[in-house]
Structure formats: structure tokens, C-alpha cells
Image (cartoon, rainbow, N blue to C red; front, side):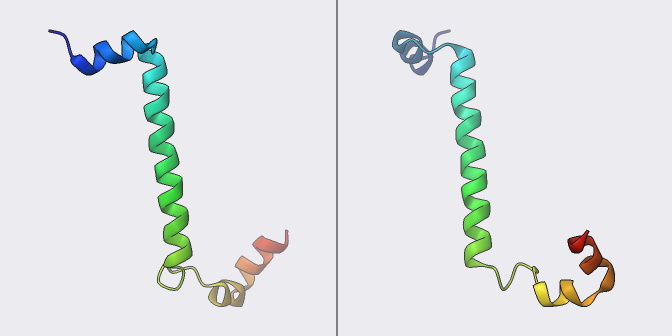
Length: 65
């Protein structure tokens, strides 16, 4: 059983390994872009608070060392 998409990719000169590399790179780039945008636009709701982090001595010592 042959697939039209697979045939088209093979006619364009893509190997199965290069197709997997492209798909993996695309997935990772979408993941990091989404994560970064989420941190930018939801920074108040994300639970990251520098004031609360710097109040505890152990976390302050961790950043200074």
C-alpha cells in the first residue's frame, strides 16, 4: 500500500530520516515558542514571583552562590 504524501516526499529527494528530523524540529520549535509566549503573556498568573522567592533565605542563597 502506497501513500501519496510519502511518494511526493521521496520524489522531492527527502529521506525518511530527514522527514523525521524536520518534524521533530518543528515540534520542538512550536513547544518552545508556545512556552515563551505563555510566560510573557501570563507572567502574573504563572506562579513565578520574585518577591516571594527572595523572601526565603535558602532561595536567596541559592541565587547568590
